[in-house]
Image 1 (cartoon, rainbow, N blue to C red):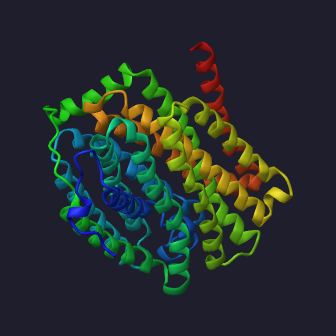
Image 2: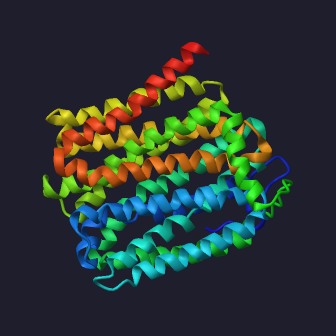
Length: 399
């Protein structure tokens, strides 16, 4: 049953449960746009005339576009009325998805441009999360952000199996056309249910962008958390771009079977609410240490024979997703606490670094898997969070 408009309005003590659920759904549906292509690049690339070596560019350009949107659009949440800004970006996402879904055979280069635009225009999700943090009481902020992040992460994890299933039965173009229809519904939901928020911050756009550098210089914690999660997300993207290729070419799985495999990874989304509660209870450091230990351990399973089985690869996906999501939510809560008036810009810096890491991981996935097989993916993937772990432990000892 759809909640009434009154039920989803903010209460005097913060956010209603219905509004939190709605924001979680919107976040999941919007962020899914940048992951639909990941498991089906093997279908898209040959149809559009892209070589195997260039296939992973579809994923990496989408993530690069997302990083650019985070850097150039998300800071506007500290300057412009939030609801209107989010609706405008959602409209652009809808148009971009429709253009991608109607691409003709042989239009590979044009499709890469659409992929970049899809990522660029799907950043409303990173305006919604700071808005929720702004509306939530301090003592509930970690839980609210964690619950909304749970919806976002389910969107990330469910996008892959959904696109595999739809592509298997209706073709890959139906994935993007269907996503455009979903975005139309999201536009209506945002316009009808979101509260208005006019930021107090007053500046020119140039001044706003320069303030990102100021924030980065001012807060060492922002730099540290951005680096940790960029390395974690690079490993995450490397794994999820390479594993469909391994399952298809070396384990003989169909697109529908790969969809079921990707669905298992959604179990890792339970980490988000747990991480929010840990952070609220003052256990952020312990939670991050657990996440940074778990991520490389999960990837190194792939060096063993059982770890390279379909079940072993699935276990790696669950553990890796759990670790990445836990560290992300804990990092977000700590970053948001630095300066409440600058949450949009803090989030822009934090998330831009993350998706630059993700774009790098996706970009090298095809080459690493093609040259070194799954062992190369496991070693490179494990090395990235290990670097973050070493820096984290060194900082903790000095602190």
